[in-house]
Image (cartoon, rainbow, N blue to C red; front, side, top):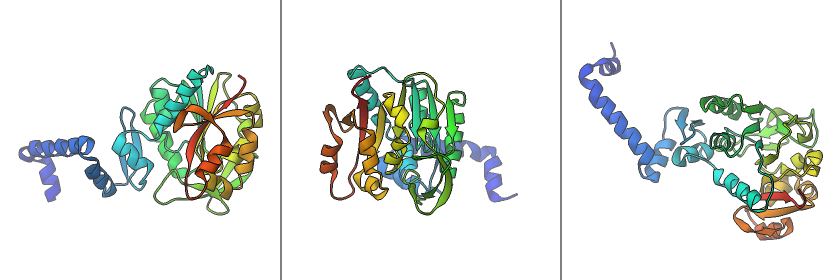
Amino acid sequence: MRIADRLRNSNLMRRPLLAASKALFSLLRGGPPILRRAVYDAMPVPYLVAGYPEHFVVSTADKVIGREVFLHGEFDFAKLQTALAILAREGHPAPTHLIDVGANIGTITIPALKRGLLQTATAIEPHPHNLRLLRANIALNGLEDRVTVLARAVGDRSGVTLYLHESATNSGNHTIGTEGIPVPSFKLDDLDLPSVPSLLWMDIEGYEGHALKGAARMLAAGIPVVCEFNPTFLNQSVGMHALLQSLQGYRIYDLEKPDTETSLVTLSQHLAGGFRYTDILALPKKF
């Protein structure tokens, strides 16, 4: 028998080993962030279960979203809470269905449903690895009957193959380009959605303009939109004009300064020069 097996099966060693394991995991959960970050980055295993109160299987190769969930229990969820607060303040009907475009591993969809902020979701994710973790996390949190998962990208046309350029260290930074993993795409207007108030949430690394171009009927119906506004990425994807055109007639709120209305022109000027971005809520003027 190997030494490791003898130690594991030894009644004499079992109690101190369990005590040491509990102490280690207690330190990882509540220890100094710099220590927990170092431990995460040095993990010799490909996956961890992290997050609180929800649970997520995260890839230890992901040094952004996975690491943030491991360290803080969630990723970007405060932005959804801010957007919903603005909707309530402005008297907009509370959405009950979430359309999560670029759902990644479920860090918006899962807590939104588990915490009762929305009731159902359509989670759209094209990347194969993210998709596997998304499905696993939905099951882990008992939400299979409340989430519809679509393994596709979103663009301005349906039935087109797009190419997803991968980031090696950030699962949320895969971008649509001219080469990479081929993924099927469709336009949002082709979605079969429940007849309830919905919220469109998008974080697709500068491809938002193309996605909104394919959502003309959805926008005409007055759906509120939350998306990243990154002028650099939008211009690189040749999607800025489409985004500006699509959101004409919408009121714009910067989620970092949610108390006052702004405009896309003002934000473009403020974010000009260098890699700067924010997240916006676009709210129809009439609803």
